[in-house]
Length: 177
Image 1: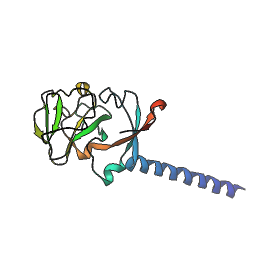
Image 2: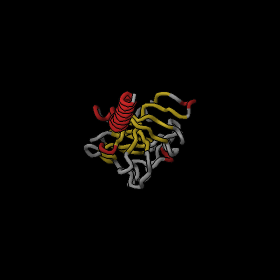
Image 3: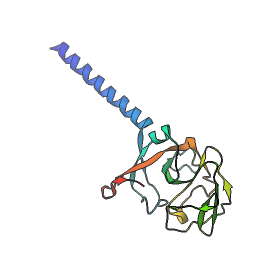
Image 4: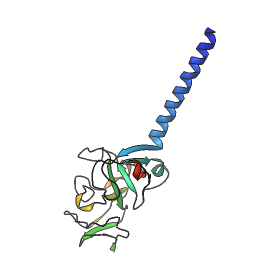
């Protein structure tokens, strides 16, 4: 009986260790959660919402215009957690803000992802460096984003992943666009 108990204990320990290792692998390479901590993405995201972030998207592909991304706090010079923004400009594109509109390579950004005007906050016409992205909040008048020197363009290495799903609150449960 004692040997059977030891085998049972060993079996449980192996199962628990396997579960922990799988959870760590999934959390590191496949997904994570993020918490919307500000109003900068309203009306798309609201403060207090919890999101599922896919890391896999950027392991096998590149960020695309319109993606909602989580930026690693090592990039964020003011050290906020979960800086969540939308990719607006891609590497090599020229971005300008005039008359409260965003222009990419001389053409108005369409779709604009917001109904709010886009103040320039001193941002001048600039070409995005290779390997970097311009990000902005959907609540443009109330978003600290690439228009500000404290954030600037975001290096690809600091994009933790693409927000793909909203899990909290339950009434907003579903995919993100």
